[in-house]
Image 1: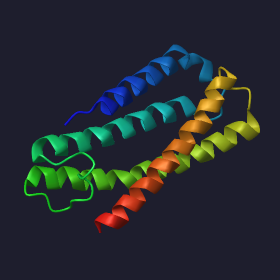
Image 2: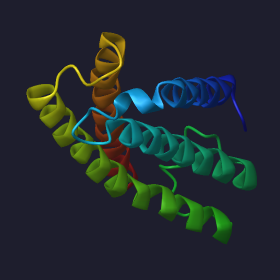
Image 3: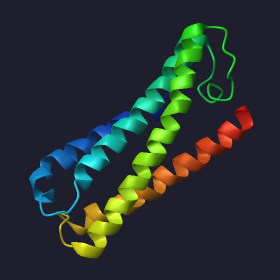
Length: 144
């Protein structure tokens, strides 16, 4: 079932993508395409949540229980849950790449970001990505 927090997530990520699009050309001085990394990471998290909500809708399972139940009766649910779990290593690799790019940017071109707010948010987003990964690892440990 779609919950208010899902709507807030989609609207928030949509706004963040819009904000990046408005400043897109201002990122050209950065040694790595950190703005593209941000957009892809937003889309990865939104896509992951969409899969969880879809499984919940087609299996009548609460969204909070979707990832813990690996034996859904519906084959579509099982496939979507598998894809959801396969997304975790992809998000992990993307997050590490973003950390490397962020470090390189901060050490070699700290003024390439359009504003200090963008840099601060980049640090917060990195922390949220790692928190997401840790949470999923703990849920995965419970599910297995």
